[in-house]
Length: 210
Image (cartoon, rainbow, N blue to C red; front, side, top):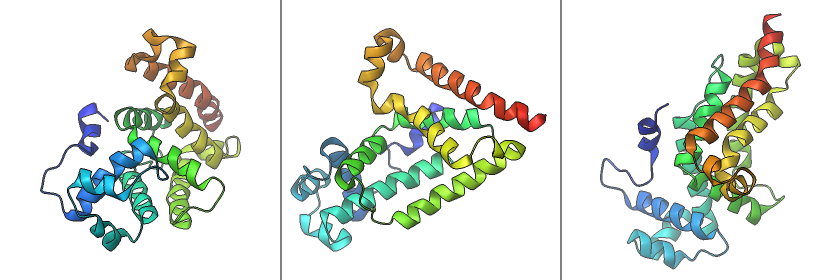
């Protein structure tokens, strides 16, 4: 997927006038990504969206309800932009996930704030979100084919997503370890990620064809 295709999902681009709900979700995504759930005030979101704060409660019930809606909205964009289908090249999938998060770091920030807020508590809508990932695990199992007994699909999916997303989660750590010249060059970092993915998945392809 090209940069231009991925940028279609940029929160700054809109082809039509936004509804009140969409204005609230867009402003809330920015504010929550910057400050997290605990340190965000409804008044901050209302001011940025240009919508009366009472509409937040009318649409979402609470600040927590709005945060959960923001996370799910961002995950919907990810799922639409970067689907995982059975039989596709998994290195290409890692590439698309990596590029999506590089261009759209807000989702990762939201997930980090979510982890800090809920910690080990069940997430709102957790069963539905698990269902999303079960579908991806099932697609990955079919992609692995005969080798699925050698690489378990669920932990493999988790590790592949982590590999793709980690450079966007902690860019300062990449800079400390690799230096600015490599870590801040998107093409160099991308090739490091894909090279590692190829190496990790190569035994799977060889065993599948054995």
